[in-house]
Amino acid sequence: MVIIIDPKMIKPKKMNCKDCKKEFEQKATARYERKYCDKCSKKRKKAYEGLWKVKAEDCEDA
Ligand SMILES: [Zn+2]
Image 1 (cartoon, helix red, strand yellow):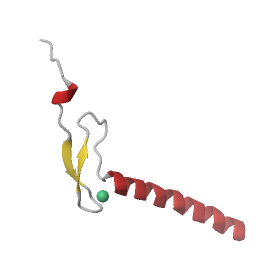
Image 2 (cartoon, rainbow, N blue to C red):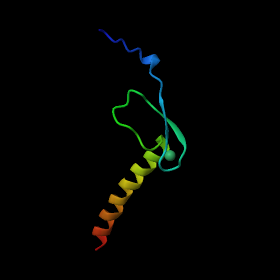
Image 3 (cartoon, rainbow, N blue to C red):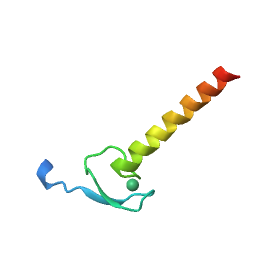
């Protein structure tokens, strides 16, 4: 049996962002399930990178 998957038939999954509780669409073909919307995942990434930056600056001052 051959199963033909038409990408147009795959509907994006509706997810609720764990951060802002807003609904966002997740690609059905996505390998990993996302917990945050685009905005929040970008914000979280930035905050994470900022954390390291602050740490590095703290080391320089000490
Ligand atoms: Zn969000």
